[in-house]
Image 1 (cartoon, rainbow, N blue to C red):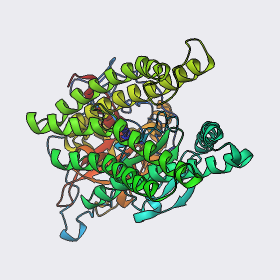
Image 2: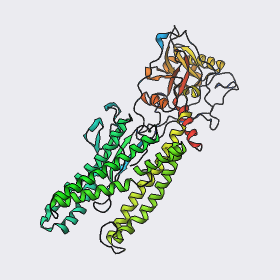
Image 3: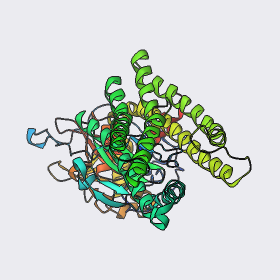
Image 4: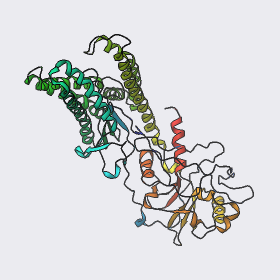
Length: 521
């Protein structure tokens, strides 16, 4: 029922660009820009462009992308070229072929919570589609792979065994009152109930998965864990109608399962093991459906409310804000109301005395549920803000002007040419003008000034792979996907004709994103 993603995650949820790890260590910028915008010293000796600390790698379910180029503390603003730097005549055969973008950071994850059997169960969420082994997480939270229905990997987290043991113990105590003749065998029946209940949670998740795949939305994985299941959808629904359907199918399937279990319960003799199991599964699925229909993020009902507000206002962000704040109000209601309802017997249990062990257990359960809902609502807001600012990241605007140099050019001479041209990047080319590599900014900073006349640029450059050729027109999520596909510190930006436009620094992109996220929506 949680929507973040993941990412976006980042994400819901997030996606930081990871530069490659090799090269000389970065050091803080201490060299001011020259009046013409090129880095250099007053005495004419060119200086390397300032280095920016490399962003740390982020998990694909997580996180946040990379950021704007607003200068801070004397750090020079990345200078976008005014025109492409043509090194040679463009050849139609040299048109870059965009690399296949990997699955983005999971944008949302829906957590379905189980609660106490027969007293408080919950579930919600949606599924997501897997893109294949290459896009799967290498270590999905230590989970065990159980299968791939519809091509989506399903994992069971170690925390599931803890909650399964809890359900077995609680439901076993109820069986002892209803069927005392079972003796210790009641715990075997209770374990079967725990497995069957989580199978119902999985069906709920698969309903979201099938709907997402039907709408051609990639689904990363489903994970069964403590307090239910989590499914991760990597893309935002294109319309509010699809968003509503995607959220509603999960509770709908839970209601259908409750109906199936009710019919089965009517077909068996009451007071028997099958009758008690079917009654427990019916009630649990009703609670799962009802809980997830509550209109607050990250529950499915919150997704439905978001879709309605989105449809009315025409703004997905408005829907997210409304549903997230309702979700936070819901978290407070759960924190206060759930223990009171359990004490009063309104949830089907016996009336409890205040201050007993059951009161402590109910309060702890309510605190966990409230924390999950509150955190999920906050993550949904962050992911929505992230997606709103993603279009501000444009390769063309963030690209540094570059000058071509041959591999045996001394570093001091290359920097002199860069300063003269007002450029902030160096591209190593062969004798025909074909780009071979990009000189790493961190490597330049690591060369002492007195050694630069004897160090050639070829030894400081990183070979250009196909993934390091970035089309100048890329922006937003497509740009981040391309950078994540080939982690590096610098990328060669090219026009569709094959002309070199300049060099894009991962650090510039990160600063651009961070500054965009800092601005109010």
